[in-house]
View 1 (cartoon, helix red, strand yellow):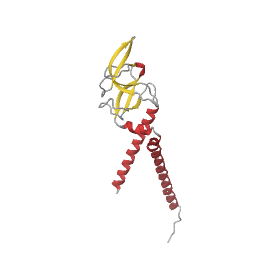
View 2 (view 1 turned 180 degrees about the vertical axis):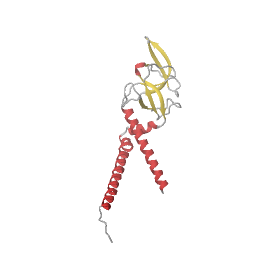
View 3 (view 1 turned 135 degrees about the horizontal axis):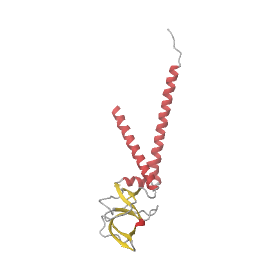
View 4 (view 1 turned 135 degrees about the vertical axis):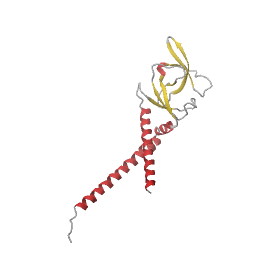
Length: 183
């Protein structure tokens, strides 16, 4: 039975770590800091197999970009997600670089050309499937189920542990205060 308790304890801490990870990713993806690392959820399969749909990409702005770099660019708002594609070609227009991008799974390059100011950053790495949890956590039901409910359960469990410790201490103290009877 002790090993079963250890297994459940291990599962509990793994689950807790997962919840903390999703919460941190949710915070970092909701509040990107300019000039710093940003997290985005990939919402299409245009970069498969290199970056799968539902992945999280970690992006950091760079001073220069070259052909072959995977970049994230475009508007970033609640209604419009940025795009993550590979730089396919670079042209110079009026002395400024203009980037032609292409998704690895797409047959042709994108028709829209990208300027450097539109680039949010270069993709450093991606984590497959974790984006599904972050995207779900951004919805009210997901936020409740992934963040709020586990937090309530953890708080409840900790309160229960504190109450049990107080009861143990009360029993110890009451045992120490009992008069000793001589026979």
